Image (cartoon, rainbow, N blue to C red; front, side, top):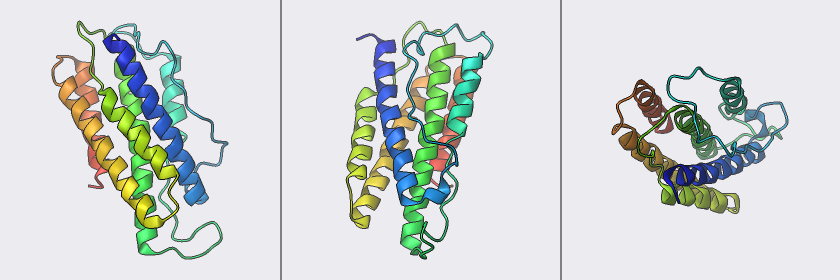
Length: 197
């Protein structure tokens, strides 16, 4: 499979993980979620075939940004939807889940922007194995009933997402491009927010 095809498959796994995460956030604390109906996210099949780095940002890029931004998760409330007070551990778990969800949305924006706009002599490497693992962790997380096991999966998802972002930063450093430099800075900021710094 060619590099651009691998990147598309990797992003599709990340999108699946993101959709699972949004549902989990809504189920565990509906007050943190946007008011509008929750639609699933799908990638444009041709999203990896860009018009070049020098091209202007298209309407579709703007729509994509607005779409992801519409699902940025607010900080969890101190009580659940029934008004019952939550423990500090539950609030911390939901905070981490929200950070992982938001960071995934932001990562997808950066990845799609780079793949759409940058013409590379060699393909940008987005590790398929890491994206599959991230999706699998999120899928497993959705099946958990016990808080302790759920928290463990959230932490594993956070660590896996850190790995994906860190490896993408390393891959982008191999290219000399203003777009890649900007994407690298964005990814570093996402990584910082994901870690809670």
